[in-house]
Length: 443
Image (tube, rainbow, N blue to C red; front, side, top):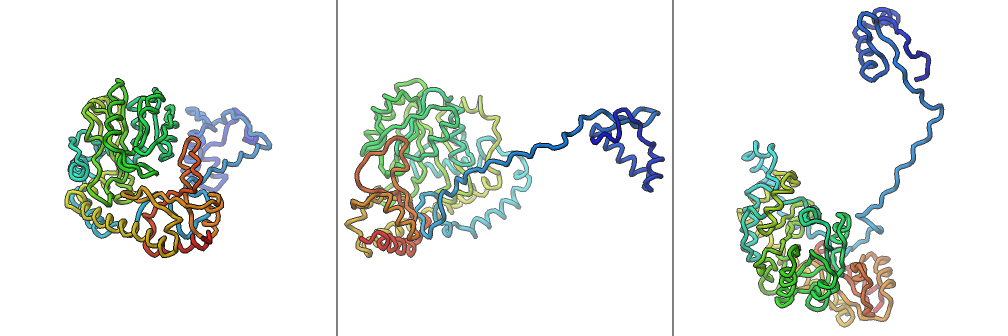
């Protein structure tokens, strides 16, 4: 590269160089072979080794540009002592000992299967367990062939855009789970925000948008907590029936945790035309880090999936799939959900009790908490929402304004409203956090 050895120049023989450098011939032979492999030398039969032409490096190479600083999407502000985020749940309730025992059993009994590629839709044992779970908890009757297991609802949602095609518009609830709109947009689909009324997504607005696919959370809207009544569900199904390629993605993300009465029947159970794609996850009921979700495809979409997308490999390791299947088959899932439901119900009550103890029951009004792991809290005050949020953070409590969940301009109710996720806070945390809020706001 420096030019000390010119192009075409012959190098000393292997013996000459080994003698001059006092190294073995084998060492020189290895060095020459490497230089030939990298394109610096050419070996000519019965003649020797010759230098190949190379472009000289510039005297002063420009310094490489620094890597751009990527935003940390997991943290937008410094950590607070108490965080009312809606993501995740109570990690202490995870049945570690049971899961560890079943994991060891899977390792000993499924040794060969664990090293083989899992079925694209998920291992049959897990899909069969999901079928039984759906029938027991949601009254949904499907076959294991309709189940597709994937690494999180986000992956499955993006996969659905490939299956259904990006054209035609994808409607989302506004307010709603913002990441869904971002997934649709990143997948090349036009996003159509649809407003809600007291019964959920407004179907007349959906019709006017021209969208072909709609994503809804009918059993417990995120974040308003609305339960869509059967009349609105029927209206939504009628909308889907009126278009050849119209589909409804029903996200049933936290249906196991209903605290009064039986679980609300799934929209999928009312579907007679194969227009509802049911989507659910084990992130709320077990742990987000497992990254196991699933969807139920109607028969005609299942045929299209197997024809066009079955080439995708399973995105969930078979080890976790077999372990989860055993966990469900032996009744551990049912018992775990019953325990955690009681625990979360106690926390919901503890939050109301904390408000009462701090004398905030006429100021902090809760709604939408009949199920799921979050409630809405409306604060009856004339003070600006930004001020309340800032004072809470300064006192160690992070709150999430409802306004931040809107894609379009939020309605101006005049009262600060927050989405209060309580899954990760125990009873003592809830009491202490509202004591800090009362102190920060000085009501």
